[in-house]
Length: 145
Image (cartoon, rainbow, N blue to C red; front, side):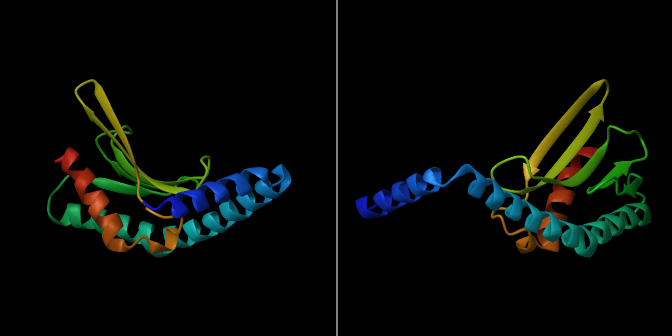
C-alpha cells in the first residue's frame, strides 16, 4: 500500500478522534436511527415473507415443522421441537456500526449450540438481498435435518 494512502487514512482517524464528543454522539445516533428505519423496512419487505415461505416449503416437503414469530424487532423461525431450536434475524446497534445478525440455536441431546453471523458486509442494510438471506437460512437449516 502506498505511504500517501496510509498517511491520509491516519489523518482521517485523528480528525475523527478530535471531534467533540457531542458531535460524535449525535452522528452515531443519526446513523443508528437511519439503520433502524432501514432494518424495519427490510423486515417487513423481505425477512418475514421469506421466513413464512421457508416454513411453508418445509411443511409441504414433509420436513421439520417450523413456525414464524416476530418478537420485538426480530423475526424467528422456530422449530416445533423446542424453544431452543430457531433461526432468527435481529439488528445489533451496540457496536460502532449497525449490524444485521443471523442467530441460530440448535439442541442435540442436552447440548445447545448457538451461532451468530453478521449478514451485512457494509452499513447499508438495504444492500442485503433475498438471496443473501435465503442462503443464510438454508445453510443453518442443515443443522435441523
